Image (cartoon, rainbow, N blue to C red; front, side, top):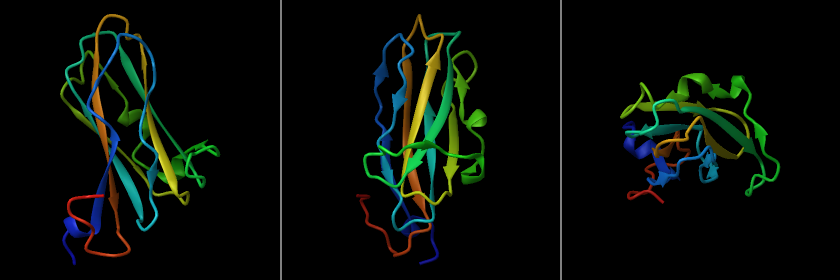
Length: 143
């Protein structure tokens, strides 16, 4: 199985939804990386209606399923940078961002935190793409 589809899997990270006009963090599902070499969060930015809002991306990891041991992912465990995964409503509407994880912890979570979102809605969702499956082919449809 040398094709990509049979060696990767997907998990819902942030479901499509409209977040209100405030600065509440948007937190992903906790992603279990067991059986995979790493993951990439694909962030889909929709048309956001607040021109002065900015969105910072952070990532936590840990070994406990509920991430009660969560710690910020160090740069050495990332592929790409958190700064490049962030975006602004004024110039990044309808664009994609990505940030990868290749660390040693089992569980990973993404957080998108808006600043200055006081006049519009946030349209954003994310998918976790798990890669390097130990056992292939992976399930289709994904688990």
